[in-house]
Length: 102
Image (cartoon, rainbow, N blue to C red):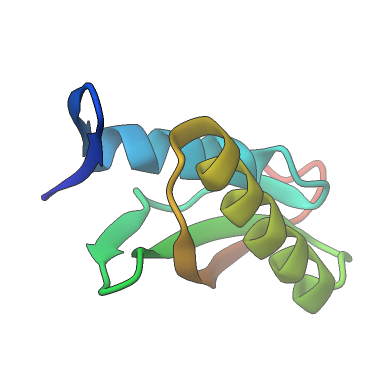
């Protein structure tokens, strides 16, 4: 699936990979996020897009607060970098990493 944006000069098509890269980069900027568990899933909605973010968080962080920060950062970066409005950003915590654990 691609997201199409019509402008006065023509059409812009953004692949899921582009959107997933922005989402993954946004999520990993947040304190408490160690990495991504798998690739983000992007779905089109009537008024924008919906994104599922699968994360690995650090042990000892407040998961609800880190998740809220991910949602805010992802929405902000999608709007500012790609001009896309995210209706929903669903955060899934797939694992917890203990510091010093391999």
